[in-house]
Image (cartoon, rainbow, N blue to C red; front, side, top):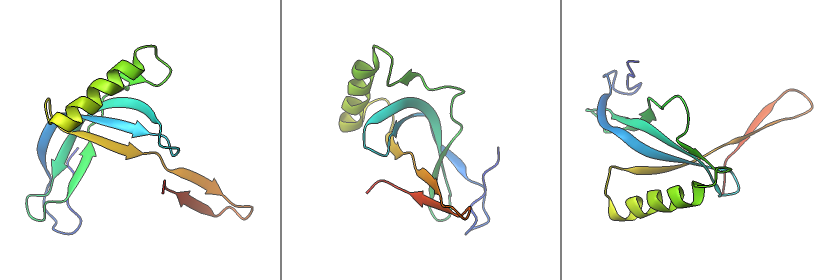
Length: 106
């Protein structure tokens, strides 16, 4: 993968390998915990999260999820073990005419 900044036409550089990504449901509840990489544009500073692992390392239905999520949030507040990103799933709605509306959490 070679991400390129569309605005600057410069290749992104890796900022962090192994950042934690918490995927939140549109309701605001945590759903999955992932490891991914953070890339940035050296020119404008824009960041993207990419290079996700093949699978989440913990999912909401697993018995240890609450403990793992609490550990992640503690790391987010203390800044230890790399950055933590909370991302929200979007909900795609199709209307009767085949149009698509993307609804993001408020």
